[in-house]
Image 1 (cartoon, rainbow, N blue to C red):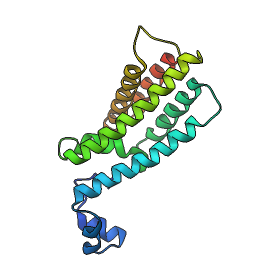
Image 2: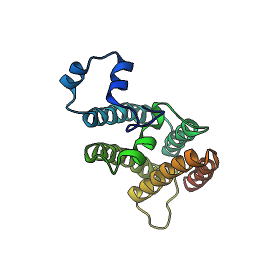
Image 3: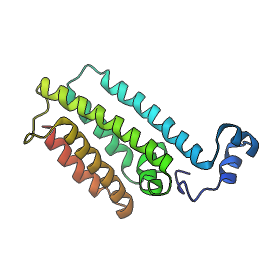
Image 4: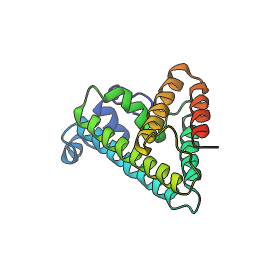
Length: 177
């Protein structure tokens, strides 16, 4: 599914790969769309765990932000056909097709930008992250997330790391590195 996309993979292929009978699938999920929503929710649950690990580090808020974006940069380079790219792939593919999956993606995005805003605010307090033109932490977090998601999509389209390198440079400059 991560290589071909959600819509290109049929339910039979999913069940055959997992070795699950069709009846068992429908015991847990009402539809392929409900399965997609569960995948997204599980992904963001694991993602939150990774954010908690970064958050627990005894380092400056700037370093936490740096570590977060360094991980994003590293996982998106040179193509990405594993679980670390799920949101990038599904955001472009299913947002217009499935309201349920779109809402799950939106919830995950909101949680991520709230975490980023929390780190930015902490960086302002510990003076490791500079303030910029009266921009709120929430707005800065969203701008960074939007830019990174877009750069990740363009990197896939262009099959080059240039968009990621550009957004990495912009983000690290804005965070004062």
